[in-house]
Amino acid sequence: MATGMIFDIKRFAVHDGPGIRTTVFFKGCPLACPWCHNPEGKKFTPEMFVRPARCIGCGSCLPACPHGALSLPTGVIALDRERCDSCGRCVDACPSDALETVGRKVTVEWLVAEIERDRTFFDGSGGGVTFSGGEPLAQPEFLIELLRACRVNGLATVIDTSGYAPADVVEAVAGYAGLFLYDLKLIDDDLHRRYTGVPNGPILENLRLLASRGARVIVRVPVIPGITDSEENMDGIARFVAALPTPYPVDLLPYHRAGSDKYARLGLKYQLVNTPIPPQARMEGLAEIFLRYKLQVMIGGERYGDVAPG
Image (tube, rainbow, N blue to C red; front, side, top):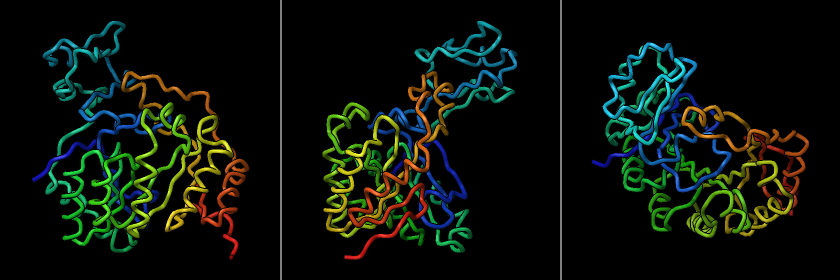
């Protein structure tokens, strides 16, 4: 049975697809978006969260580490990430939860059993399970086996994805997934490479593939001031979506800072600390671009405007 790397399971989620959902976060993503609110989902291996504010300076973790990666230089815990292999022994020794291992391998059988615990909420709300990340398509064998098991068990599935994956993986997953939440960030390839580290060609082609297969998709566009929020970018995305065999609905997701504190826990610097939250008027102005292409548009999941007939 396939195993996969996940970093969290969020229950009672209401923004990751229809109804009440259990969201499973896969660990590992080929993109490097600076606005990512789940930076712990980028690496494909376990890593450590460090919360110095919780440290009581007791030193219990120091002898537990087999690599000498921990110290108390100012009376508060410090981690040498070059030495750390995320074995988790320090986590067990810490009495104040200042240390946490992020990422664990799980089996399909175990994960399906965890999802099944919430079936009552799914059945009453039209919900199900959402596979998010990280990037679920980056663990294809695990994901496909999970989707098969969910189908056998009558669990409705949603894939939250960047779309950056081999076409054969997307096609295989499309045969099982009930809905895709599909990110389009930047229509210009040079800008896409600059801000995400990968080309957008495979992402656009995979969306065309899903449309040709009749897959259910909601296109999601993160609105990041100074990066993705230009009228030119929005017009390009709208034009692309409108030209698909299926003109999918579009959800504009306003930038937020939720998750920015996780960067410090990972020993990283959050790059967009001075980026403003886009005001509602700006979001509505961008939404109007999509209405001009006769596309259904949402702002943060809420329907905006009406598509003119004809």
